[in-house]
Length: 386
Ligand SMILES: [Zn+2]
Image (cartoon, rainbow, N blue to C red; front, top):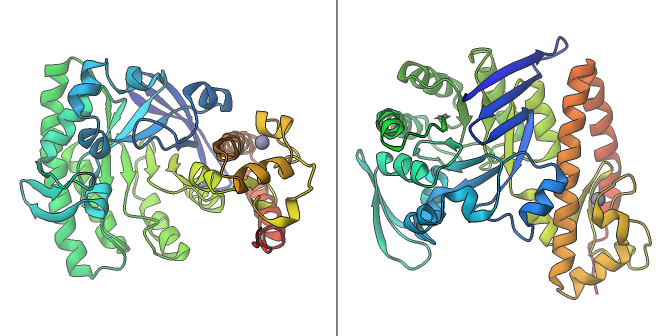
């Protein structure tokens, strides 16, 4: 079994409940996956992630290919065994990373040539190689190589780029079929929708992927600098063009307000580095907005990071203590806030699923956003510190 089931369609908006049935376990949607770019969620162990209720992770084949090398991960039993994680892992093709991190990039119809951002070594990767590598590491969900555009680009540039991404999607689909036989292993393939901020191109991209045989989709190239209005506009436009039973995964999106708006528009899956990236630098998510724990206002604060939170960090430590850890550059500080943030995101997604089921998602969204933004200005205001 390897699919996506629609469980419940909200009557008040496009929000829905679903289930990804993968080889490596089920995922209830809407879901949020933390990012394990280099086969680790920064500062958190699989035990930590499990206790937060994390259902799956996103890793990155470009990074894993460069370091430690696909042969190492393959030899050590595949990515999930390598990292001690039993639940599903999506591997990103690395399109975004090649185009944003690698140097001296040359793009050909056959693939992409670049210098490693780690040691400057020269590499050439074909779309077929990218698919094969994801099979070799036994990923649960695989993604084709795509060109991830910066923002802004002209319509002409976006059109030419989409032609290339489409060509690669086709080559990837063929490679996927060959790998199914060769590896006797069947991960879930997603097509990646590109087309920058141009609704017509996005639609063409989706149509091409459907014709090519993709049933489930990732939406790439968002959250690259465009306004929220443009972002929601693209999703609005696309949402009317998906078939009901298709999985819709919006890549790299993770601000709570974005998740709510995109769930409202029928999106199912999200990933983002922000819970751990902000956690490491001292920012915690709460229902009342983000709090900057470094802030001197918390120096003698005996409260937990988030009053209503039941996580280990909140049950055991004060803001004053965690602020001290962050200011003293103690690794534990970033770890505790990252743990809280991932916990908070998992609870947030659970609440979203519950409210959809109850038929009260729209009210939840309105009330949540009012509380989240009402106080964040106050809590965020004093960024001093000594
Ligand atoms: Zn907490």
